[in-house]
Image 1 (cartoon, helix red, strand yellow):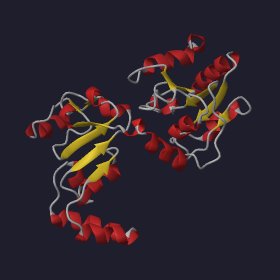
Image 2 (tube, rainbow, N blue to C red; image 1 turned 90 degrees about the vertical axis):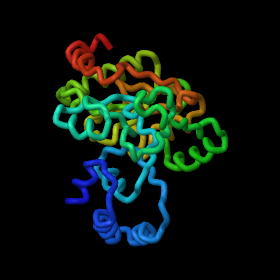
Image 3 (cartoon, rainbow, N blue to C red; image 1 turned 30 degrees about the vertical axis):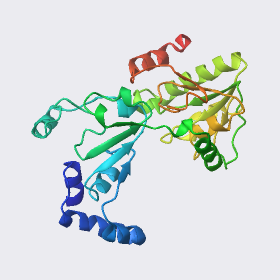
Image 4 (tube, rainbow, N blue to C red; image 1 turned 30 degrees about the horizontal axis):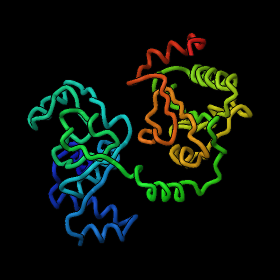
Length: 273
């Protein structure tokens, strides 16, 4: 418990804080714990520096880098007033935070470093592996081993989101919105492949059986894009899915920056879609 509270403070951890973390790791991953005890300083890579597991692993390294986790990397996240004093003491903005604003974060590897907040833009490094044909071939071979739905130029990959949680609408309204979208795509003669958000239950979309094909839950949307014979359309309400893969698909978002007021209006007036 002490180790976790220390990690929330975003402070470097002394040995007496790190050792209980390594001891806990030793119970489930003894080889990893052994390397952490004997290895010289290593580079810690995180997708999201703020989630609970990342906070714990941050205790094991003096510095760390983060790598693209979607749109959240580019946003300023508002903070409650009571977090202002400790941030001011560390010369950080009092009213908001950005991914990577921890002084121990050295580099932020993202698709669009120029879009990072000015506070952390100097830490930005461009991810360029998608411009390397050999790297793309490796990604295809690794990610496309599953049996995937057929994806062509007439396919629309519909990346869903838990709108009932995010926008605070009933499940029935979420189903109404996605049902309206699928109906519109059917009218255009499009094939629809559903790529569900990891936080969603497949049962929420059972009503679309026969009208859309569901992609395997464990297959990332990028695998569907790269498996396509021709660039498909990737459609979402407001997801970062497919960010950086614009060379391989036509990426369409219906809202920007969590405009859930519009989503709630669509639930009342689906004809606007």
